[in-house]
Length: 239
Image 1 (tube, rainbow, N blue to C red):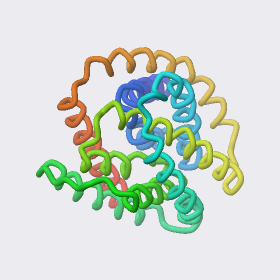
Image 2: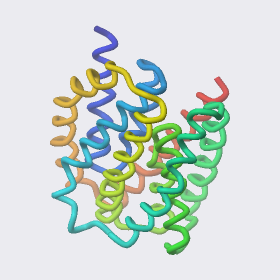
Image 3: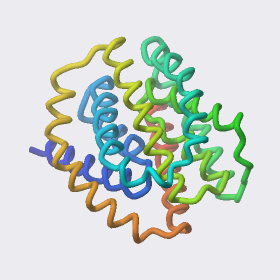
């Protein structure tokens, strides 16, 4: 019963965060799902539920999507996805987590110090590659997108819409890749099915929260989530 309650809390909170900000489900859910499931199952449950959220929201956000950036993200991710699955199957996960955590924490500090860059075509593709790598390796495509949009001062409406639209592609591709190369289990699909009503509640709560968040609060959410992700991955990798 305790495990069920924890699972409900994880999915609800992550769904609200994903719906209200456009990112956060994989960042918040995956670390805690790893406490309840095997790594492969945790990653695949994350992919399935994140895909459901993106599908549910895509019709509402399509007018705010920056299709140019999204296209370059997709092109880059096509390179990153096979690299990520190779890492997932052959490289020590702790080494990867350590490297990612140090990078996230370093860049988050730069963000807090008001470091900014201009958005470029090359930068878009590089971020797409990194997102593809992290999606199939640890189930977290969000950090590269979040960091990039933050340092380029992207408006919250565009960030949320473009990120969710890109997730629709990257999660679908990554899930298929995971199923082909590492298989799946009944636990993944039963748990995902049981989580769907919780996701629906999270969608409604998240939509309401989104309307109340201004740009400054949105940026604060960004810093908190990035710091949490970096610290968690660091602790996980050295623990």
